[in-house]
Image (cartoon, rainbow, N blue to C red; front, side, top):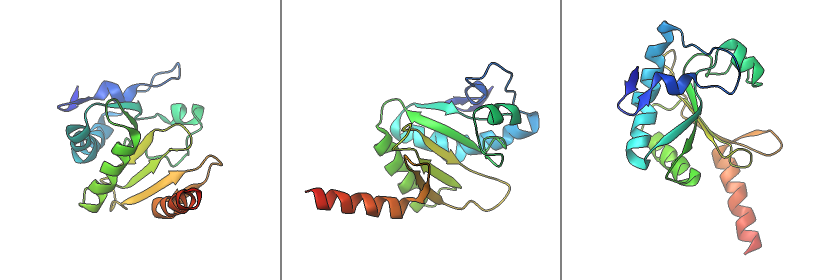
Length: 158
């Protein structure tokens, strides 16, 4: 089933776990909204995106160590890796999209760990337009604070 021209339901069911990961029928509209509002415009700008983690059943989420309140369980989030653009280009485009008013609930850059980007969109409440980084020590930091600290280190080492 196509969610948008370039995203299918099958991409959101993929899991590394050896169990079924079926999306409940009533959650499919949420995935369509995530794709239409965020992922398809991002793909149109930067090229193909790999969904490394989309929907997660409660059991899959538990097995991968996800937060019990993860938006993946609600079919409102995707972890992505760009196939042609760099992760930094992808992140900068998401920041631009957030500034332009795209309804991004949360974006997290796993720059220091896996290099993937988590992005979410919700239809159940107001989207927060929240941007963060996850550090090597497992902390989540607001993007501006993380980026400011990173720039200070770069200025010192020059």
